[in-house]
Image 1: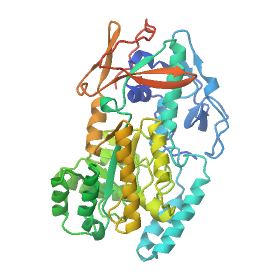
Image 2: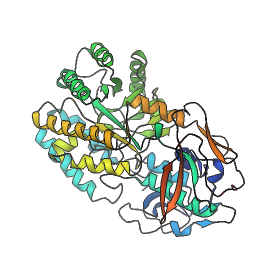
Image 3: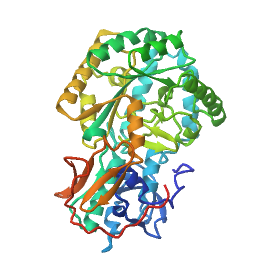
Image 4: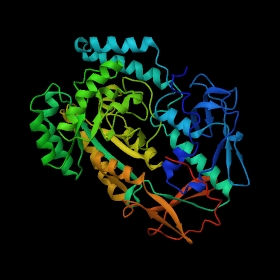
Length: 475
């Protein structure tokens, strides 16, 4: 049931992930894990969120299709403002983000190997049939939830609700998720797979520019197209971003650790040579436990829900997160290939549905659209409708449309910002504070609601005095 790493780090600071997510003053993140919180390991609920990890009950489930036990009633707020939990939320969040809830049987690994060996000779119709078959089987699985799984955000919101109740304050201050008070961020990316895709990069840049959108192109350094250097220069000259996309896109990058390390060494050299900060693997293959071998600032290879990707799973979050030194910018919407050729969708309704679900959690809306797949009029028209919708959202909703590199720089700056009390005011300190915004979390009819202060360092009505400060320790 459990991967060998799923039970590790059970003794990590239970408030660390919560603090990193909200960037609130540390005295509000006062969680304690019950001593008996390692009675069993498995799936359980925390309110509406599905969790996986150590838990102070023997009722944890071995199956993600049947999760009856809810840990929420087992929480115990104290008069001091501390909250005793029957599990370690930091461990659980890491298990979800890192996909440690998965157990990949040897049979699945063998099928993966055989598929990519046979893929060059399999007719396209057979490949699409197999992909639809896999999708239908994964749709029957309760967790992760299709088409968006926000279990990580739901855990944090539930912890915030408990904190508000335990401390008795009306509002808790934190540093807003996105710069300039934007509700969400959105990034467009294009993975170039074949010569046909390379030939259509100019067309795709023209199309994006017509909607005032700059995108990131991921290029295969040892791929099936020529003129890699010229393609990099041409894309950059037009103000678009360029990143590394796998090594040769043969589906074997994460097959074995020794093979991965050899290829990662080559990939890192290409990244350094072309001064590229971002990476995405071919076909969204991944093993986040090996990300420390990548010399990149950010990765874009982990889907929120992986029902339509070759590799099962998903990080269950729509928010960027760090894996060691690498910032993960998860794929939060369906790829164009899955939309066009597996689900056979001829509208953008699914994209719209996913966008609204991500907006509700103030997350990152990220897309992959291949120049290889929009060469036909129907697919091109569908993509244009998406661009029109993005343009409308930018005008009517507060969305930050940015390049992955810009999102990476902001998220790293935000991770170092601090909120400090200045009398009856809160001040944001640190590099990047000019774009940061003070926000407050409160409970409205039992639901956590956010508001952004009118100006930097605005006063609060949090019903102070505060609980006694308690440091989180070294980070």
